[in-house]
Image: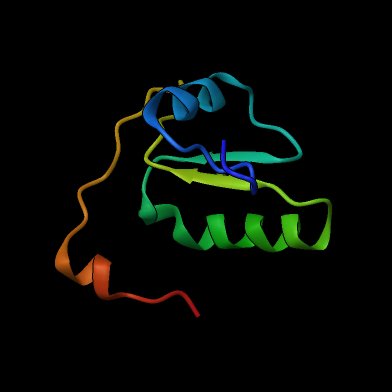
Length: 77
């Protein structure tokens, strides 16, 4: 893990995903759930912090998400 607790490689990411969602971890299947993910991040920022991972199914299977050129150009305000 990096100093900020961000997984640095696939093995660390897989270990993090095996944990249950809770007060510091939220899993979202895709950026189709971006609004909900941002709401969760706001709650984490108002609390003790946390992480939202996109590209993870509810059964905790990592499926990733293709990054289209429009997704790579988009900015979250």
